[in-house]
Length: 390
Image (cartoon, rainbow, N blue to C red; front, top):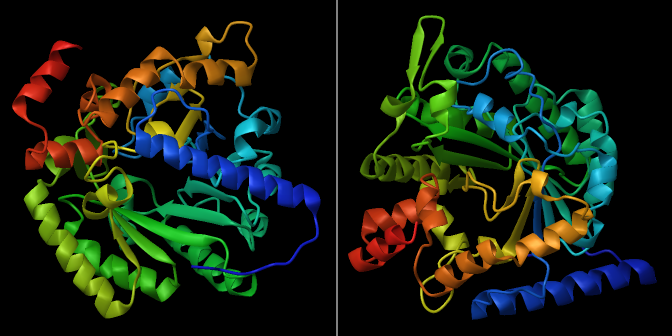
């Protein structure tokens, strides 16, 4: 699929494109071979921009492990433009760069400069927002740019939104309408996905949510599932929003019911002509595969240089290396020694052999692990052997 074709006569740009292409080919070869030590650079870079949030700084969303994350971030480097530039070795060959902040990226004072540095025709910049910050100035920074924007809303009404977050629903919807209207004049960019966490208290809103997003003109709707998170213990598993009591564990929908909800949502989306992504149904198709390839591609394809440490994937909760371990090493040296260090090598070896390592089994929110365990894809002896190595 081609979005556009553009001629250029820049040797520098051509060299950058060729280096990224050669690296991507080598990376795919190493992934398929299950290489424990990598010569290629992961083509998907994940990092952190902002640690503040214009919702959580007042009162965090009911399902956000905010306090836990803020403790994890103690001792982390400052996420600014100079730090992003220190990652140029990885940015320069990346297909996409994704912000994984527990915060609101557009709040960063250098947000526009960071977008300008990362988002090119050859490289996408992805970030998530609560939508409150999508005012005109921020929209101007991303219009026409190769940006993949995710806005999380989780309700079809203002009253429903207030149960989980605050009373900004109408403002967010107005910002979204303006962005989707304005981007039609700017190559239809950024690409806008709006996400909805399906829970017991809002599962009846899915169809209305799809209809609302269709009227706004977003590019895609993403349905997500709530899952067990031990890190929520610090923030509290029961939260109050006025008269509404949010009980985290009671909001989790079992897999069989999720499957039904996903099927009904897909039928509604097809009827309305909406591009729908259902994470509990579709995630597996994009990560790992049947046959001889490793169970998951993340430790090969993605590099998580987050402010709480270097991670193997987005579902892991414990870094394989924290910034307090950097010592006198430069950023690139620290990253290189970590991404081919013993911890990540062991994870790659296990996944390549068809066995989930202890690290993955501890990541209870990982859709691949949850689906494999539900379907009995891993045999009991394999699981027992992994548990014994913990």
